[in-house]
Structures are given as structure tokens and as C-alpha cells.
Amino acid sequence: MKKITPIYLDSSSTSKVDSRVLDEMLPYFTEYFGNASSNHLLGKKSKEAIEKSRTQVANILNCDSKEIIFTSGATESINLAVKGYSEANLKKGNHIITVKTEHKALLSTCEYLETKGHEITYLDVDENGLISLEELDNSIKENTLLIAIMHVNNETGVIQPIKDIGMLCNKKNITFFCDATQALGKVKVDIEEYFIDMLCFSGHKLNGPKGIGVLYKKHDIQLTPLIHGGGQEKGLRGGTYNTPLIAGLGKACEIAKLEFKENTLELNSKRQEIERYYESNNIGKVNFKNIITAPHIISITLNNFEAEEYLMLKSKEFVASTGSACNSEVIEISHVLKAMHIKSPEKVIRISIDN
Image (cartoon, rainbow, N blue to C red; front, side, top):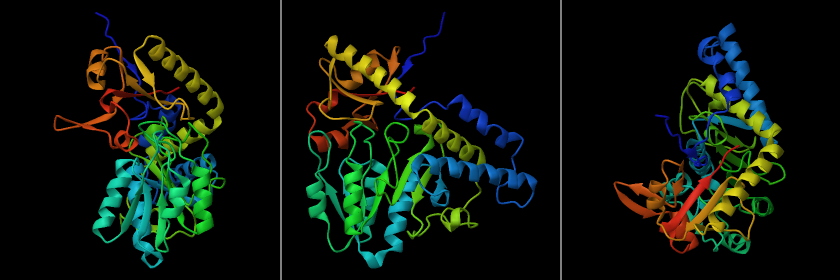
């Protein structure tokens, strides 16, 4: 009997590694396996691969390669950026502004900082998941040292007005940190144009490997490291370099930059086909159609099913995500959908597509 493989529609959770990325990684597992911190031929070969990747990452972000720090992923990058900046810059203040719909990695970090005496403002969003720039401006205080707002929401695909936020932060001389994990390769990301001071993303959302990510930070920003060690990454992230994964991440960024226009056209075409299917067959209503969202994330409210039930029924056809998180068999409505006051959040599914 022929095995049925369901269509994968959960790329926002993790994406398939591009074959070209895998090819780039393999030699550093077997042939060029030296420690990049070693001063011999194999070590230097690994170091060259790391610096090549640093340049590839810098090219897609439009920044200096010396401003790129390699981490284990966006979660670590968020912790390093927010905790590290807060600890290193206590003289500037202890107030941070973020948004209720941020990724749990950011929200949990802020909750931790609250236990250490930091003041956190959690901005509301409207029915489309967008913040009010006026509310953001009014929330700024004399002791505000950091504003942390993600570019593209991982559950809804909603795009925040990042350039306007960056301009406001720049005008007020407040550091701006942006989680661009769902944005890179899908929408335009430009450090200089958007006045971004720190930014993070993960390789596995970009057809790269899991376990590798990036923190971009401007030259003059001071951070306290989370991981101490042998002085790698300018002393900000100790530990032996994971050369194969770093090489793969660089290649994924290079491909994403070169094929950006082609990929976004393909994503938009696939998106339109999926939206037509759900609405023309009266299966569900596509959310946020009156605003521009990232092309790869589609939020749909089902008409006649709850999300868990529907995805279980369709599990042999395709895999996707719900608007809920399962924890110890308890279904909890997504904090993102709660903040947006979405009607019938238990009926919301997220379809996320890839090229």
C-alpha cells in the first residue's frame, strides 16, 4: 500500500532545509571539522566558513558583518538582547515597552525582568493586531531604555509599522529591538532604513537548519553576556562554534536574498489559491483581508468546526496549526488571539506555506 504523506502547511513552525543549504553544511561535519578557534589549517578553514556566513547574513540585513552575533536561535537572541541590554544599561532606565501579541520568548523574558525591578508596558493592539503609534509615543517615559516589537506576528502574519516605530525610537533616542524571525525572506527587512538597533531571527524559519540563529546589534550597543566562555562572538556568546549550522544559515540567507522576488510571487500565488478554496467552498473566513500581511501566513476562522477537530479530520491530507496551545491536555486559547479579541478563537487555524 502506498504511504500517504500529508501536505506540509506549518512552515512558520519550522521549514524544510533547502538542499543547497544541506550541501553547504555537509563538508563541515566530515572534511573540514576543525574547531574554528584553533590556529591550524582545519581550524582556519572553519573560521573562514563562519566569516563567510557572517557576510551573507549582513548582506540580507543591510548591516556590517561585524555586527552579527551567532546564537542557538531567536529565543536565545531575544534573551541576550533584552536581558543583556537591560543589565548593561541600568543607568539609562528600567522601563521597557513591548506588545501583548509578542512571541512568548519575549513576553517571558519581560516577565522575568519584572521580578528584577523593571517596569514593562504591554501595548494593546486593534482588531487587526496593529499597535497605535500614538499610544506607543504616549507610553514613552524618561526612564524608557528599550522598545521591543516584532516585525511579523508568527500566528497571524500581521506586519507592524516597523519603519515608523524605528523612526520614533530614533527621534526619542531609545534603543529599538525587533524580532524579525517571521519576516526575513518573506517581507522587506532593512536595518538602516528601518532604524533598527537590534534584531533577531532563527535559521529554521528560513529553510536553514534548526539550532542556529542571529542577533544583530549596532557597534556601540553594550550587552551583558548570558553565556560566558572562551571569548567567542566578541565575548558575548561563549562556546565552540557550530560551524556546519553557521555555514548553513549563511547559505539560507544568501538564497533568500537572491530569490526574494521570485519566492514572494510564488507565496502570494499559493496564498490566493488557498484563500479561494476556503471561502468559495464555505469552509472558513480568511482573517485580516483588509490589511497587508506577510504572504506565507494565513489565518482562517472555520465556519462549522473547531480547529483541533478539523485538523484531526484532515490529518491525512495536510498538517497545519491551531490558534491554541496544548499543555497537559488542556486547550488554552492563544494569547495573540485573546489580545486581538478574535471571535471564536477556538475555530482559528494557521496555514503557513513555503516555496
